[in-house]
Each structure stands twice: as structure tokens, then as C-alpha cells.
Length: 106
Image (cartoon, rainbow, N blue to C red; front, top):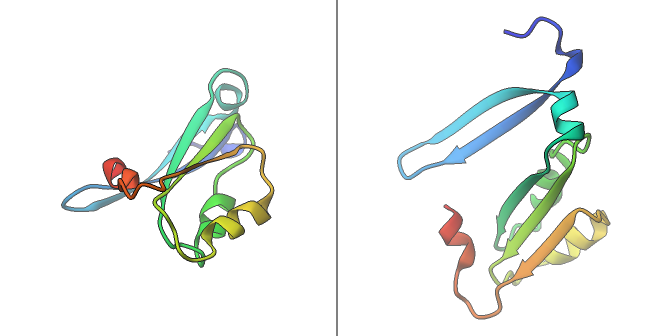
């Protein structure tokens, strides 16, 4: 366990597999996060207007990152909720052909 957490950023990781969900917390040195790497966070989206803001707001913003949201043709107000956040790091890819792109990520 890390004794002095002030020099580290705690990142929660949730990995969904076919059989189970793995929840882990990792500690990454702040210096590495701030100076040397860019993290791309990909979020599959389909009708998640009630939770998408919370998901995005839980992403630490003290390091270089981009948030890529792949929308599978949401029919609710999910995209409106995302635009209300007004975060320049967010990139939205819309699947208007019903290819179910986000299923590829699972």
C-alpha cells in the first residue's frame, strides 16, 4: 500500500468481461500523468441520460486525457446531457447506421 498518496492519483478501473466485472483501484504517480502520457477514455453510450454526467464527472481531470463517447443512436437526452458539461476533452462519435459499434468495446 502507498504510504504518501499526495504524489499519486487514484484511478478506479471497472472492466466488464463475459463472466464477471473487475473493480480495481490503481495509483499512478502524478508526475507521469501530468507530463508524459495522454489517456484516451472510451465510453460506449446508448440511452444513458440519467448516468452519463456522473460517469464523465468521475474522470480525474488533473492529467492529459481525452474522452471519446461512442453513441449507438441514443433516443433519449444523453447527447444533450453531454453537451451541457461543456468539456473540450469530449469527442462524440455517433453511429447513425445502427452498427452497434459500442458492442465491440465490451
